[in-house]
Amino acid sequence: MPKKLIKRYIPTPDKIKNMKGLGFLGTLLHDPGIWHLHRHSVSKAFVIGLFWMAIPIPGQMLVAALFAIFLRANLPLSVALCWISNPLTMGPIFYFNYVVGTYILGQDASEDLTFELSWHWIINVLGDLWQPLYLGSVVVGLSLGAFAYFVIHVLWRRHVIKHWKERSVIRKNRK
Image (tube, rainbow, N blue to C red; front, side):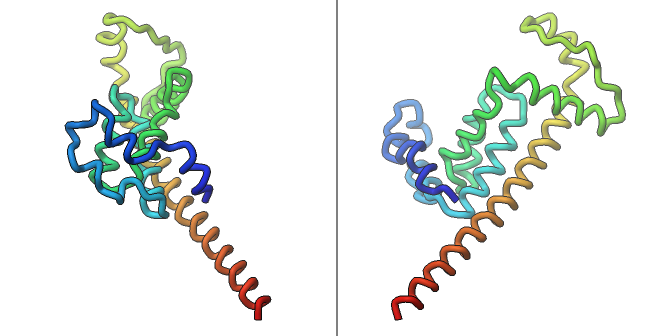
């Protein structure tokens, strides 16, 4: 896995520990398990980040961070994966989740669905959409997370085995 590339872009543990807004977490940020990049912490981070990325709630990054700390997953990676659903991608992601939810519930997806940022739309339209939206979001989030978990494990293991074989060849050539 591109461990060096990931380390280059994620903030250091000391930088995050010294952020003023995170003081309420206390010593939880001092756990070295949430900062290391190894197969288990990265695969758990992908599950957490991709699951919460698919859920339409405010504060996805905060929830992902809390889950990462609780499950000892890589904290920066869990939070960064939530950024997949940003203002540019939220519409298509959540519409896809809505379609998946309507399919599971056996309903017809509304073709002329328009989004408005108003109380009237939230109260009247979202009231009818929330069940298929959240069901689809949970299913999509769990599916993406499970798929990423197993892919990370397989790719990481293949990478390690490849390097073991390369080192073995180098050792044989030295003798």
